[in-house]
Length: 68
Image 1 (cartoon, rainbow, N blue to C red):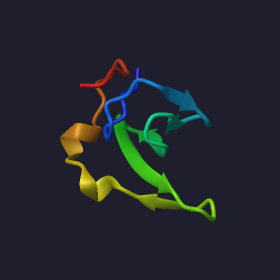
Image 2: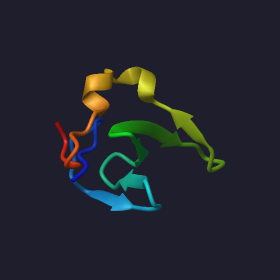
Image 3: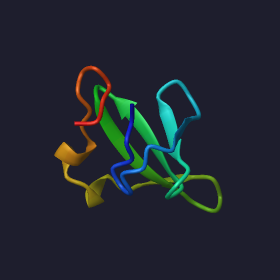
Image 4: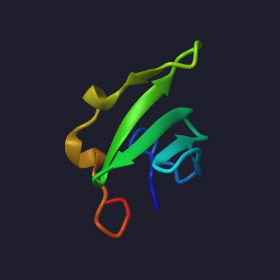
């Protein structure tokens, strides 16, 4: 289960094979090698990275896919 690193919500929807969307704070998440990347969706539909706002440890998932 993915927990949003921004708002800690569990209200996460799947929008692609490794892409998710937080319905609580409206950010897009992608997962690669157990690391969550956080993006803001801009008005034109482009994505802006928010990874610099979080420690890498806050964006890591354990191997079972649960938030650590």
